[in-house]
Length: 531
Image (cartoon, rainbow, N blue to C red; front, side, top):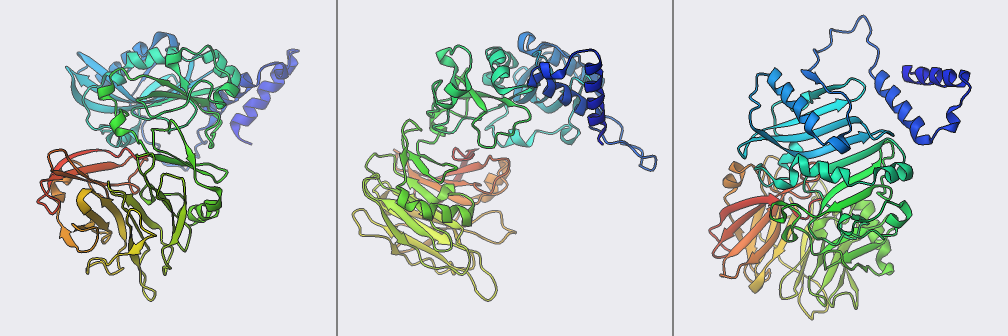
């Protein structure tokens, strides 16, 4: 029997001998007691034959205090004491909090905390730290896996590391105090897990608590019904709260508290980086899509839900590259669905009428799927699969013109022979079309081909990959979009999605006076479609 279980039974026996019973206490208090005991005895017993353990990391004492009321002052005092132990200069430091995982007990005091922070002096970035603390040991120390490094999750979410007013510790503390903690404990149970991640946002249409409306208390049924608000794509600063031991995979018992950013210009969730068009697939097998930032959602007709189920079984998801929704209300909408036999399901008139068209057969599961639209309403679709000895591979590209009866197959560049599949399609104005094709695993960049005439002829396209690499973009997977600017110049965006890590993917934007080049590297940014 585990030691923490033995301790728990002893505790129950002791209480019963005193004439009271734990059955008279709340379930939340029992849960918290067991949580504390498990934390105390969770380390495995060491055998005499085991090697000498690695020395503990440097630490400082930090007693539990009411963080919700006192803010982060005692925490940063302890953190700076820890820095001084390492002979680091702590004069005139300021802090940004990039992520927080905070467990709260019945009395509202913290039980454990993990925080990713940035240190600044005079507005200049110095160093990133991942710090951990729990009430059982009362020790604050650095996660040894991240000593002296910039955290991976930060590098994947922030366009720069300059000091950000949205991430000030004082702002986070102020918004923690605004949470209806008593109601949350009563409704969700304890311990509570409160989490914050910079630049995270709720998906369009999700239920939220809009804190700008100053709601009174918290009721789970009202929350699930959307009576406190729904995400609409506007800039959002968010805290999430759930019961610590409840994974809540469906997300129905995780409360999302949304606030306005302190500085919208410094928040990556500003409108131009939100998705105006988006989809969501429910656990019941329905697909909904929006073209107005999640304000309104339309349903894919139910007769296509069998193809949707086949797609999810074969590809695990409706990938971001495999659907297109015109931002115009009467513009085309489409999805590449189906399993071993992919099918284009599309509406040429904004969802009024629907059609479907098969894309042929493939020697393996065609899990590379693309659909995109040009400004004139032309749709392009592609599918492809891996190549293998004996059966080979296959990739196809299709085009549906405005007012056309369906999709027609297009001839591909001579170099695209099915050994590597098409992985991206981007259409621009004036018939411009760019496709990306996978390359060998040793290559960090796709092959690119450009057509000036809607796919009738092709030429190779060269980009300055090395310039993107020097800016910290280690690889790119596919083309994402192609846009003509007001001055007639062009921008081409490539993304790591869906092959990035931690749910965050970089985009790299290139610029040119003409689509056939020459192209210059312009900038990197987080992919707004990344989840």
